[in-house]
Structure formats: structure tokens, C-alpha cells
Image 1 (tube, one colour):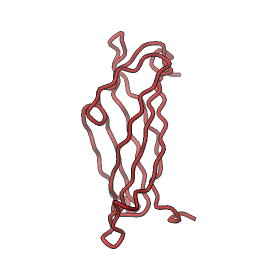
Image 2 (cartoon, rainbow, N blue to C red):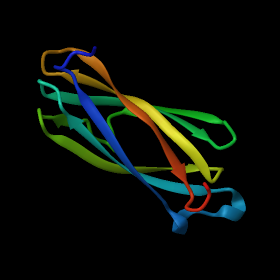
Image 3 (tube, helix red, strand yellow):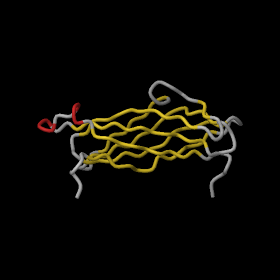
Length: 126
């Protein structure tokens, strides 16, 4: 069982961006809004991100970087940080998953897991 002092929950809402997509060129744009909720017992700062993006053909792209959208938020106990970003894929359906590297107020570095979530053009899945 994981340590209750370091409990970060991540929720995701996705949407297809038709106005930024070009299906005839196999370009599908998606936005996602992520809420990072600190349900642990200590404040924690989000240091970096690691994404694994898999398109419908099985091609995998990994993205790593500091913070999220230029920020490294300190998330107090019981509070959350919400941000929006996006990605472009060459298929109508794909998924993303990953993790955030966090550091708690006591200096402990830990990973907050981002469970797999789907990106899909409306109507692409039956």
C-alpha cells in the first residue's frame, strides 16, 4: 500500500479540436484539462512531467519536461492545480499516460501516476 503522506490524484477531461485538425492530412488535435489533487498529508510541488502518447497505429512518443505549461506549482494539502494543454496525433484515436515527479515538503521525491486516458474523434469509436 502506498504512503498516505504522498497521495496525488490526477483527473483528465479531453476534447477533440476540430478547428485545429486537418483530417485529410492525418492531423487530429486534442486538448486535455488536467486536475492534480493533493490528497496526501503534506504539501507537494510538481517538478516535471513524463508523457507516453500512443496513436491508433501503435506509434509511441515520449515527452519529458519541467513542470506543466511553464509552471511548477506547489499544491497544498486538500487543494488542486488545474491546467490545459494539448497534443496532435496522426490517427483518430489514441491514448496518453504518464507521471508527474513530485517533491513533498519533507523532501521526499515521488511519482504521481497519470492513468491511461483516451483521445478520440467523436464517432470514431462505436
